[in-house]
Image (cartoon, rainbow, N blue to C red; front, side):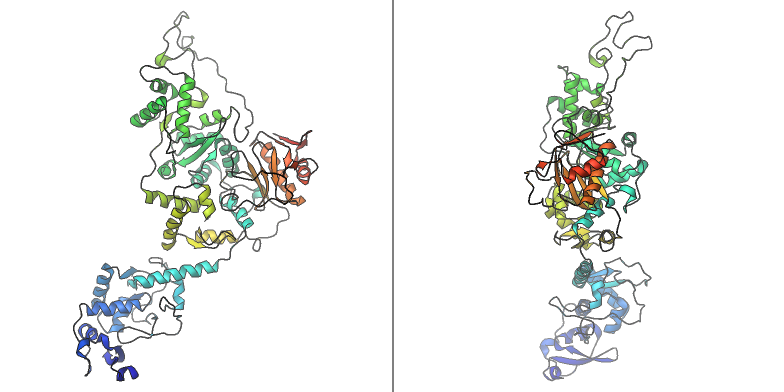
Length: 637
């Protein structure tokens, strides 16, 4: 050969097989394998090297995919124990990785794995069939489906496998790239159909979603998926939980809170009697709490907070009235209630029942107008002797003030139950970020920039992208182009991608009638304004109103597409379709929200900036049960 004649290569015998090797490796072959060198090798190439065996084994690893120590030993003509010891030294230096990489490992003595180049005497190779050289080095084309360490679940031998660390990184990158290329993106409406079903929202007639949730276990499942999401208090029960749990009753949520399985926390007050509320599972509440960092309590609030934190446990309202006033001041019930709710809206304290929240929003002026209910009436409490508390035996005034309170004084409904301090959120940023990323994957199925930004997560999408990318490297999720027009920075679990594709119009059986869903605009099951952008209004829309994820607003989706957006109170509507069948389905869904009692009433006057009367939207709503007024349409429970 020309290289041999030019003294750039030498012919050696390894294990009874003649091979060619680079002259620079003469000393390594002599000292590691005991190969006799031919005459004429320059002195510069026969000087001893520091680790001849490690160099040869490392080169074999760099030029092969996953292999066993037996395969490497057979290639180098050495004992398995000798090669195994060398591999362990390389693993300690981080140059090779031990694990189970191939789904089917060949038994010792079987055909060894393909190498990236044509083998030379020392395992240094050149191209062979089935490889595609690139600027990163040649890797077998079949290796594009390489698996992550410890991912093998098929029958395999007990022999450990080894792989060069850089080769393994290349295999991972190419495997992930191949998986991404397999997924064809779905359109936005397919995701609009997928997300409500993913979050267990019940559709008319059963739909194609997951089985309907029921009972206490169903509430736990729903809250687990929505942990930490702020939703207006007036929307949680009638518009969120009741749409997911078929037999939901308020007593069920109270039971879970009394048992210590579910907690609620405030996330800021809204105008009127409403505010943002988050629900949490007690065993993971530290990972989902998000208290307001700028909150500074007043004097009464600070005393209440210190007492609840320092003494632990839960306290009834009457046990806290003395604490709030301190040693020298007696506060009225209204002042103590106000201090408690300041702490609650700031995410510092909670109650063991949802009753105070219900009582608060029952006072009217809420984001989602509540159906009027009779106020709680209760006769004055009498003692065993038939007199009111705080009076003497002959009806004269008895003890008053302090813990004995006023005559017949009861606990205000907005302060019912026991109050306690919420735990501190997780302080380790790494643990918190990882838990948040996994929650987002479980909540949305496909995590996009919009869904992260809609939740106003600390660190934004930049932080979540880094965490999700690490989860992708660990095989916990996949990055790809799953939904059209949202970029390639989307993450999902592989099983979720398969289910998402089943909602594509190409794979979905045609339905005779469109399926409509009415949701709160702030419901995480509404993809618009988060993962998906709001659709554009028609050119002739004469309104400055724009849709948004606002407290009190409603959206109506028909087959995943946004059809109606209802501003708070219903006075203004935005319509995104003129199809009569679609509008009829949307109108029936909107009327259904009111008739089932989720919202008290809607009074509609304008649609897309114009009077609503004599429009296709008015015709659809009237057919569904709305009735005309001089100014527009009205829907009542």
